[in-house]
Length: 366
Ligand code: AMP
Ligand code: MG
Image 1 (cartoon, helix red, strand yellow):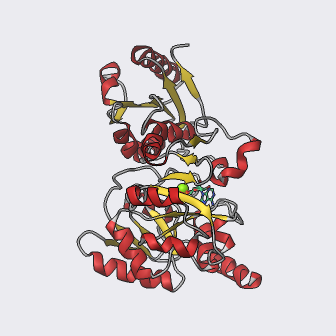
Image 2 (cartoon, rainbow, N blue to C red):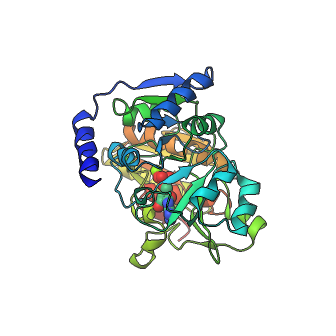
Image 3 (cartoon, rainbow, N blue to C red):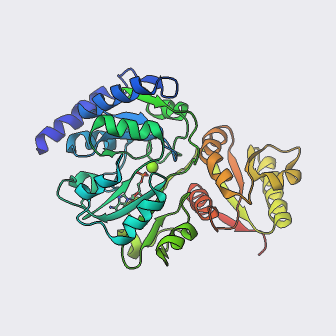
């Protein structure tokens, strides 16, 4: 098997950037795209598809060789496990060794949707999917194109975000073309992703542990299954002792080309500090863009800024964060970003923003 995998690796290296990438409008003609995509996945190839969170780069999750292609095309380290996507709740029975009561309750409420659950795997799941862990992450997405594709493929679909590793996750088909054009045969274009950040990841156990915050918030989960723990590193860098819980946490994510600085604090002080930094970087010839909430816009009139959304409804900020990091992270030298309270969907916003900033965060109240 090893030599076969090595030859796939060699072939991929030689062929990278030589493929024609077809982009199909999944909204106007859903059948054609998902049927073709299903065939490609069954044949061991890769298909990019829309989900409600971000675009996914999918392959047959039961095929070691097909999954290896995902790691190669993304440049993803092989110790970062993948999520398997299913189109029916009953599919979990083949992939987890048991279905815990809490998992069933959460699946009943949040599936299909942006919640990934991690539990002990069966032997059907190849080790390459889980990076050798004895658990596997499963999700049933809400997006209809995603589910139709998984159904057409007839297998669980392993799919990380469809970006080059380390770049902000793609929320439009155009973002995918920028990163993976010429490396994959097919992109199903379903328009902009409504959630805009990756799924919530919950490790089932006693107690369950939130490994990655998302649109399904801690409060929403606790309303269904009682108390859960937050992983220690959601808002600060991972320390060595906590690495085992979720290997993906140790990689710097979402880093745009620009330097990213987060400024938090009461609105007036936050804005004052942002304006000081804007002037300071400007004086040294650096271009800055401010990423802020609609509430803070009046402070930044006359400067270069972009509104991400309403800070009282953090899901609106989440929906625009990655596309803003891509767009302004290319144009500016420095992005000055308004931090918000890490509650509700704000926890996911601050998690992604702080990782994009390499945890560089100033508290204007101190
Ligand atoms: P991505 O594919 O980029 O959305 O990342 C998937 C996330 O889920 C990564 O942070 C992984 O570390 C995490 N993950 C996937 N499988 C497992 C698992 N078996 N145990 C813990 N975390 C996992
Ligand atoms: Mg990703």
